[in-house]
Image 1: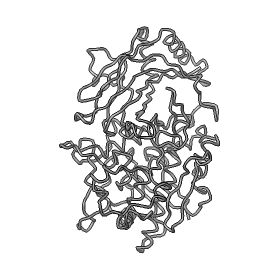
Image 2: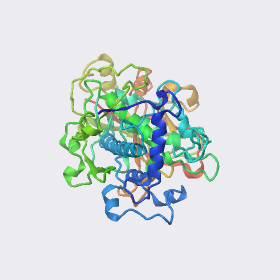
Image 3: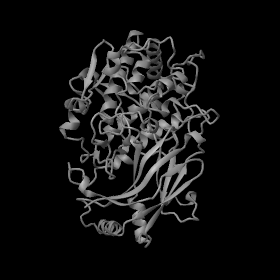
Image 4: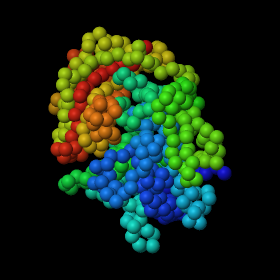
Length: 508
């Protein structure tokens, strides 16, 4: 049997059978004690755990008996972020969770072919939270709907939950390469080459957009003091929100969609295929409903019909078109399987002089450019315009926001490049190079974390904006102005610090 994952908004009813059985399965998992590896909270702990936050949000009490140390070391705090393992790790995690819900559904007399729905917020008029998740009641009007949580605040911090598509995109589907680099160049569709990686650093394109964005906009924080955080806003609590699983099913679907383009390839490097366990690091695993363990590798997660020999878990999506409209990504020109340009092809062009505080009002800084490096950027962009060497190594210009630290993972801000001192960002959308949602920044800012508080790094492709400045004769300057504009007012304790703003070129 191949299970079919369907769009939650296209099931025909707010409480269609797939949703109703999901709620019953969630209720069953929530009824199990924390120490049970198939319980709701145990599964959330696999993704991340932060004791103080769990206690504050009511997910952990003094009466809870914790899982054994053996189980904690084997399963908990395992999620892969800022890593080329981000997509395959979450696919296996999702697969095992789906199997546990299905087992609960069948135990309750439900269908043996139940599959996890996905939430395609890019389909027209479907960016709102599916209604069954927004009501505290079951469809018969009784309370305690297990799909509901009060800790889901939405873009305005008022409990109205939706995905604001003016900030969220799926441009990552246009990336040709899966693997990126961590030295200032492109981070690739799927992330940068790492070992087992749970914390800070640069996120891959799909992880940054839309993954991080949806987490932050759905969870956000309460607009009213004390500005409590939403579950989805932090890796340590995201798995406690039932909508998490439908969001990740859509991210998984977008990976499958990306692979429908013939020139888009998963890595062939054994370091990726065999996963970190091959180098003596933690392996990827998740508890199954029969007391067994699903142990998996990225290689085993590539074929949805086989899944590393787990054909009994095979699944497919009812629609792989990104926006649900039926149009598939088009094949893109370029040599198949081209290696990602490495360190020798990435060059620092310039950087600012001081850290930048992101708070209630917009922040400004200027990136000082090295004259010789700036000339190479201009020459590379001119060659790109003419078509010379464009296929082999097109010129790219990347704006880096380095060592971003703070305590709020849902403090979104937009970045503008090339604006004059008196120009209003709202009147110049052509200068907008991206919106950042710093999902994971609080953990990456913790000095006691395994990555020693290095913070996050965000990489924005500013090639088109810099090329426009060049064509307008405005690149022959010593500095490029950068404007940081919060997407909404930030309380004092929700601000961020950007350690450095820099510009890199990547190309021939």
